[in-house]
Length: 254
Image 1 (cartoon, helix red, strand yellow):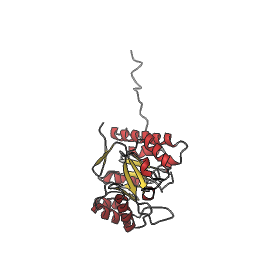
Image 2 (cartoon, rainbow, N blue to C red):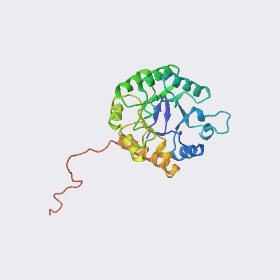
Image 3 (cartoon, rainbow, N blue to C red):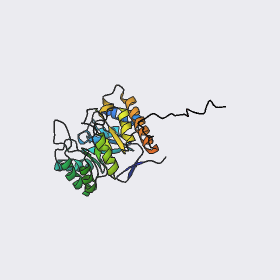
Image 4 (cartoon, one colour):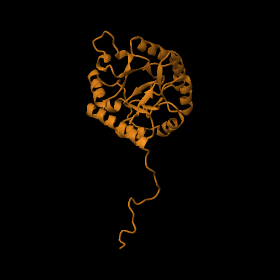
């Protein structure tokens, strides 16, 4: 089945995206291997060109880099970080994060729209992290986003799909890949998100805080694959009453 994820004109085989912020460098390499991911986020401060510890040395060349603008508090700071990332060779993809709220770490949707427009005009494939709001998502589309990345729950919480109904609206209304970012805590939740029709799931904390990182990465890989296949196959109907799975009459007749 040819079912590639396409973002910014580039095809991706895997629909699991790795957020690398909570992994050691060796763990990052293991998760890429066992999760079979095609795209990995990285913070600019970890791309230590010429230094002893450089995350780029642990990411295979066939994996697409998705630098993020972590730490940006407004559009101007985010644009500056994105330019620096591209300047050191991280490519044209950018995971846009603008967070001015230090308590709940919720994205600033309005600054995100501004930054998306600025970066898309400079040739970036912008993948903005956003609170799932239909009007904001439409504004991001108009601003030139390559995908939208609504949060499932607050960053690092592992609470799952707290915003499920709002994400469902985006899937139905937005003609761009919708990628669930932040909050997914279990493979079953990743599978549920994929069954809803989201294009991909990004995972970081759920794998990083698990008992066996390599095995959990594999579990998320399989869950995302299962959810995607279920979505394509179309889920069976839901009834309010019971319905026999086999005929209940006629089997005792001569």
